Length: 580
Ligand code: GTP
Ligand code: MG
Image 1 (tube, rainbow, N blue to C red):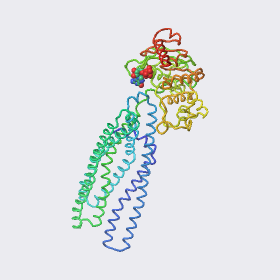
Image 2 (image 1 turned 60 degrees about the horizontal axis):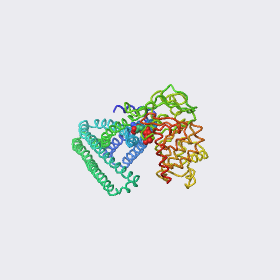
Image 3 (image 1 turned 180 degrees about the vertical axis):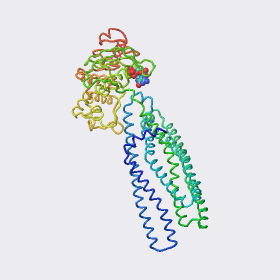
Image 4 (image 1 turned 180 degrees about the horizontal axis):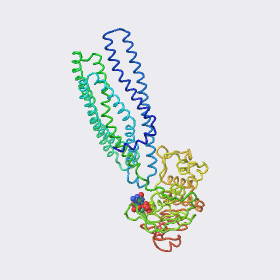
């Protein structure tokens, strides 16, 4: 709850709007409170002088007041709701910018759906806290103070009677509001369960059909759908009961006031006009009372949501620039691993143990090893996607942790094992790391990555849409797009993690021979399960359970008769069998 205070800096930015908004509320309430007085006066005057002129004068006065009041109501909404939208805008940008900074490990600990919910539903709740909650509480405060002041002036006993019944409305709104909100959330949860189910069934349609699971899926869907209706029914029962109850309570207050007030008028304690004024004030209080209950719920929800957003904003990115930093604009690309050991979790099993490696700028080193040997882990440490221990990974002889992250990451172009393409055009996907690249540079990169045929074949060439709303690329095509993306980045270090595994051996060899010139100019770390891919490398390192098992050039390793030689023999045999 006290974290609501952390919103103050946001409000400060829009101080002008806030102050003029509150002033508008004050003025609109003041004018609103004038109406009952004018009506009261009108009644009393009319009783004595029932002329057309009196009627017109008062009617004109009322219309005038209402018009001016309307302007201020318009202004308060305009100013305060816009302010809340601005704060929402700022918070949303900050939230997204922060998410961009958080490392992979954060996303392994948190569900995507939950992070999305914080950025959408929770942010909405905070906005309600910043705009409507402030607007309604100010309205309530001003109206209640003013109305009660006048009501007590008319007759203290009658005012006390009103004070006794009205807060019940606030209590009912709070209790019902809370309950209704909880039920509404349950409905929403069920709705997202349904959406997720439908989304998975549409996306995974091939699997569902291939396993003949249509019936089972239908049944599952029907169950989800029934539960959705059931939850809605529960919600409807409460909302349906709420409105009559509210009217009942308000009505009760009025009956009490009519009964007691009527007596007062009959005995001549107050005039008819005063009594009319009083009931008008009373009706002015109904909405603020409902608002109190509502505002309390808004504040509770908003502060809980704010807590959830701040929790993410408070997460300090583990991987960040830690001064003193060294300028990294002219990285040449020599890579050194010095006794590198690494575990994914603190106190976890080491995935890499005591690895030493020296790669001069411009050389190509291949890494092979069984699945789970730690190859991808090793590559991820170089651009600090995961943080290596101090003084174990060096680029140009400088600890990677000393470079500004942006410098380091622009010096490294990595093709990850799992390709991810955005739902945009082929060209935009390739240009990810260098959006300013020219058309011919894009084409050159695509060509080098072996996408020549695709560029010709697709009707729109590089402008072809890929992903959900465009064409579906094959596994091998996706990998080549990812490769083109890395080539275009034109960085001194190139990390290729099994990046042509879905491409047939023949095509892969062609692509690699295209790339030979590019490889000459860069430091390349190449992971592959195929001997044909790695055999030309300046050095081949064989990893086994996180340790360097063998290292050398192809011919030496084949002679060594170890893991590499074994792999080589088996792949030769496979090739021969395939040729038969
Ligand atoms: P292949 O790609 O299958 O050939 O294996 P690899 O040699 O690339 O193995 P990798 O480096 O991906 O994995 C080595 C070990 O680290 C495995 O036991 C994985 O379970 C573990 N590992 C890999 N990535 C992560 C990660 O992001 N988080 C955690 N906690 N563990 C990981
Ligand atoms: Mg891997």
